[in-house]
Image (cartoon, rainbow, N blue to C red; front, side, top):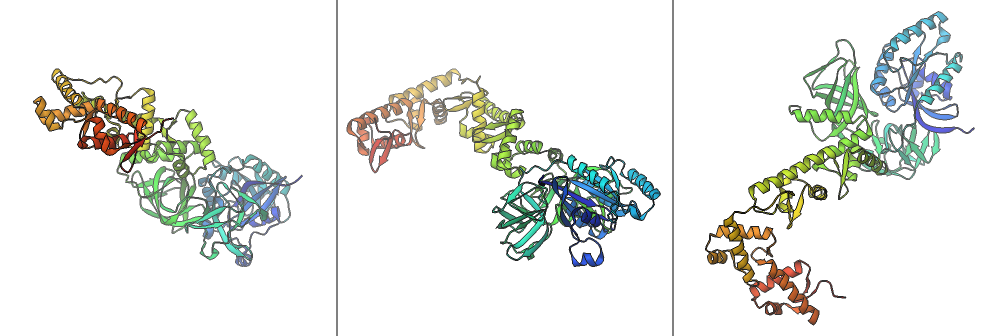
Length: 639
């Protein structure tokens, strides 16, 4: 049966000189100590990658160094693994890096593993039994508490069959990673190969990429195109998340690339220095961390000096969890849901780690309780893809977001994003507005209440008006116009608001006038109706009726809102009958003559140029006519 490559990567972990590299060589035939210095010193310094066939499946194996001086390298390698071969030598038993490696694996979220009890050929059976008991006690309460402890020797092959069976069971427990995410590969190593140019290696933590794809190198921001791919040291057309891979990108200079740089696509990621994180302190005696403490921050394949700023109090103690802000000395690239480790600079010890919630442009001021609550909610949401997408919709700037904005923030490619948005709609947690905008139902309710309150306030201050003009309501709401339009359409359809005479109103609202106002409204309307094509100015109307100018101004505004009067420009107001009659005469004339010269319009209306020309321009504006020089034609020629 042919061997199938699956995107699962295992890693070794354990104290120095406990036989990790020898075990990998026995399994794969590969010597992962490839550096001359490693050969001379007999220890792993860099990460070693090897393909391994288990049953009929080919997986990747990462060999990490065990010495305390190379913990940063161990973290870089362990970040991309799906399961661990935890190596403990029978002659030494549990050692300092055994403990630290287990802490790191736990903080990185590794959930599957087996224990290889190596060097059993060098000790007595009694010693093997004693160390097995010691290891089982040591693993109590950890993710390896129920893992098989498999005695073996990489020198004599003793116990290898049992170890191999355990390894096969381990691979069967691990579900291959999904490949629907945004491609991202934290770089472990870089070098140059003749004929291929710069080559970078590592384990993609999400997505997939193929030969010919355009990629970008961060933080440098340099674009390139994949010329060739190797997966588990064999040529391949594509690489999947979770596979040990090498990518050839000739456009890059390998000398400018360092471990921790990232290969990705599009505009999904940008280097940042502020990160909101959920920190878990290790449960070690007398361990504590003060706000502002400098640490070594490890995420992906990068290590950078950083400071930890607590969101609650000034100190966090052993075993406690808290949302924190981390400020890195230089920009790094990370995604929501990525794991991280923090270590003290000197002496170098792992003290905690956890989950990256989201990159931030600037520091959050913890003195504001609302921001602290928001940070906690964000940290809670990031644990799941669907919950984080819902959170992104709920906290979208302006109240709603389109698919492109959500794709970039949630780091979800469009096809999968559409599926997840549909799930959230079906669950009733988000809703879609016109303009392809998505809004959380709780946010929609708050925004709709805000619009309703603004309309009600307008009715209270101007009860005589039929409602508030849409533009005025938009200004009062402070909403983005696209969001406003979508919400207004939704509210009109639901009947929570109504549109009356071009204004927005509450359904139960009716204009309220006292007897004096009604008499004045009738008088002003009658005056404009009698002077259809030579309407009075405000001052003339006030003088004719015998009331103050301000009273006429208010009355004209009300009649305009009711669409009884029409303001065609800044200076001219006509009765609506004048607009209809002018349109009728104009249309009949052009139907008969084919066109109208501007100078002739005043004769059609029996008025002067003062009113004829503004009315004619208004006919252009509302689409009755179109202008060519001083000649008008019907906007839509008759059939």
